[in-house]
Length: 327
Image 1 (cartoon, rainbow, N blue to C red):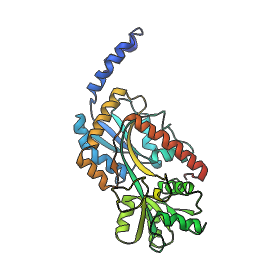
Image 2 (cartoon, rainbow, N blue to C red):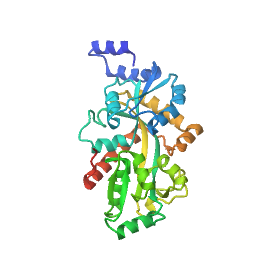
Image 3 (spheres, one colour):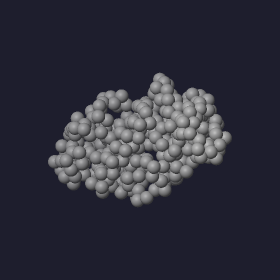
Image 4 (spheres, rainbow, N blue to C red):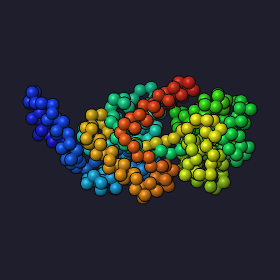
C-alpha cells in the first residue's frame, strides 16, 4: 500500500473502509518496491542457508527484485528471529526457518518473541525425513528389530544426539513414547560431529539424524542405516523401511518455511506465496532440494499456519511427557 495513501487515510478518520479494501490489490501490484532481505538465523553452510541460496535467484527473478540473504546466527536461531519479528511488515524482510523454530520455542524457557503472534506464515518450502542409524556392531537390520531388541533389554542401550532439545532427541523420544515406553538412555553431545564419531567407535548404539548428516558416513560403511522416519518410503532413501512399519503412525519430518513479520498485508503474502510455490515446483529447484535430503512441498499460508500449530502442540506435549529441556 503506497505511503502517501496511508498518511492520507490516517488524517481522514471518516474515510470509508471500502477504500482500504480497494487499495489492497494495488499494494500487491506495487510489491516489491525494492530488494527483499531473506534472513537466515543460522551461520552459512547449514541446510537453512543452502536452501535459501538454492531458491533466491529464481525467486528474485519471479518477483522482479533481488533477494538478499542475510545470515543472523545466534542463540539457536533466536537472534535472527527476534530481528525479523521487529521488522517493518511490508514484505521486504522475510525469514527462512526450519522445524527447530518450533522445537526451540517448546524447550527454551523464554524467547523475545511469540512464534504465533509475532510472525506471518508465508510458504512451506520442503520436508525431509530423518535416517535411523546404528553402529556396525549393533545386531539389528530394520526398525522392527531395533524396537524388539530395546524392548527385550530395557536400560541396556543408549542413543546419541547433538544436544538436549535437538531433532535427534525429539525424534528418538517420540519413538520411545509411541512404541509404548522404550527404555534407552540419552547421551547428548555438543554437536553432530562428536555424536557420529562415538557411533563409529561403537560407544553409542543408535543415532537418528538428517540424510545429509547420515548417508555419507553410511556409504563409507562406518555405520548402518536401518530406517527412515517418514510415514511412507522416501525417495531420499528408497531402500530403507519406515519406522512406521514397526510403530504404526510414527512420523518425524524436518521442514523449512518462509515467515514474515506479523501484520504483513494479506495481498503481499499471497503474491509471495504464489511466487515461492512456482519456484518450488520447477525441476531444477526440486532436484537441488532432493540432493540435500528434502522434498519440495509447496502449500498455502493457511496450511503452514496449521503445521506450526499442530507441531507446537505435539512437541510441547512430548517435551513435557519425556522431560526434554534445552540447555
